[in-house]
Image (cartoon, rainbow, N blue to C red):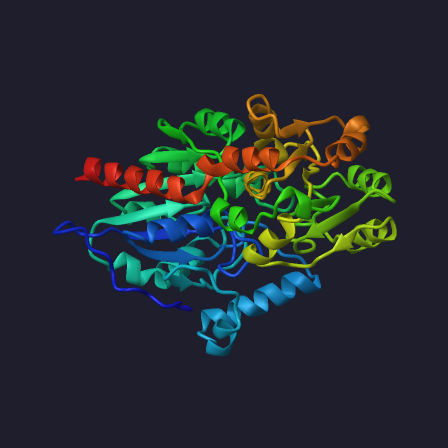
Length: 404
């Protein structure tokens, strides 16, 4: 088990502070912070948080990135402090658990994994009550039975992602539906899925962004350039590659396509696709910290969400939409249901079909005034983690009250 710095446990008067175990679907130091990392930060303001890294829902393959990832997990599981100190830090004090479980969740491995996970989370299991399980994965190995409150925070249609064990996901969700106090859905598609699965109480809370970081780095209209930005995982499963190629081609002599993010983050190798885009004039900025990304976004004109429309992306609620807006960018997206709904009420968000996408990019490059930039930032202000954190803490307090 690897442990980050743990602050003194908060106390709310004489009320016992909850011990929250977060089961994640990513590593603590994954290149891009996602919902689970921010939830850990926000809950840690008033609770004691233990974050358990991914149990490996996607079966690994014999390829370099998976082998490196597994080797790193083994070192962390045995407390390699040099490995720990080199990891990308997250801005929250929490206990980080790197469980050494088998990344196969079927009958032959269930007893072994259950024992390994319980051993890895023994501190939480022995912690004073109230105990809370806040899980982003439905594969929990029964840890909810040791919790006073269980919350299933579902941010994706996990079973539709390539390589993920849909049988294990489905089995876990059916089991959780009768035990979780509440489920949180980040899109209407996810909400509908959870209702069909049998969760009796579902809160719809679409993804939000760390908007204050991006607003602080936003530049005046006169200091912006005709640059178009995509930030996120560069993966063949999510991105519409032909669409990106058409954008890069349309920008030749007019502007620049910037790509920021890691390659092949669980969705297939992207090296060849990146070379093709670079030949067309795109530029890959690599993996940026949030503050570095905010500095880049604050000088651009347009933010892209060029996703393919498939079973997985229909359930996506991209927090980058609010990162773009809080940087003062116009947003152009393919027809993701969650973005389409936002575009109905926000004139700075545009949804376009594939045939019209590149032309709309060029249109949105036209200079705008500071009033437009300010309007975009203002429209994102209510979609930040400051407000969402308060909502989640109130929800947890309410559920603990019901439990008592």
